[in-house]
Length: 300
Ligand SMILES: [Fe+2]
Image (cartoon, rainbow, N blue to C red):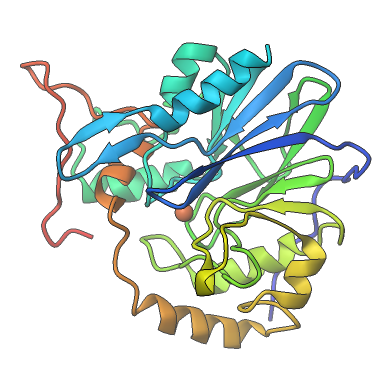
């Protein structure tokens, strides 16, 4: 049995957003500016805060490059999008929002993630688990505007319970639903992740038109190749090493679970979750005005 709901919106490959990619070497994350060709409007997807865990220091060199690019072109930032609650890097969305404005959005199942990690980090009742830290929560099939372009959201859980793919014209920002064809797929073993659910989400995503451009959130340059982040639906369907050329659900689940069992936790998972579940805000200051992150011993 396989449940793979249809794409809940019409696509329009004639709309061709301008996409500017920024690669973060420390975390292998790709952030994007998505720009409306018919206006000055743009959005930023999956920005990265620089965080040195050993020293506890944060910085915004990467985010400043994105801000500088938007300012230099005279663009106006309308949205800051998180495809999901990342476990490998901290979001810089609130920092960019302070400098350029725009609304911060994520999938509405963020509430499930907040509930899970609110408990793991013992955050108490002052940490709200209703997504209120974000400006907008997207449900499956929702839409919003970047200037004249309409963006549609596609719910693709599995890697986490709250992943959302954002589709605009001939471009789709897939978050960690897929990696490049030679990278396969993202892990599905974080709390709330599920390999079978991920397989079904990928099948759903691959119902998008063949020529749709797909933009990845991560690339690790497998087998020593250069970093890449853009592919198409048809390339994924034909060549993805985990789900391509008709791999069935049970084979994918067996492969994914066996592989996940061998993976170490991402270096920044503990700080990332505490910050990203708060929409990129650091935890509240203590009574002396200092900011701390917790390490749950044997809690993850
Ligand atoms: Fe992720």
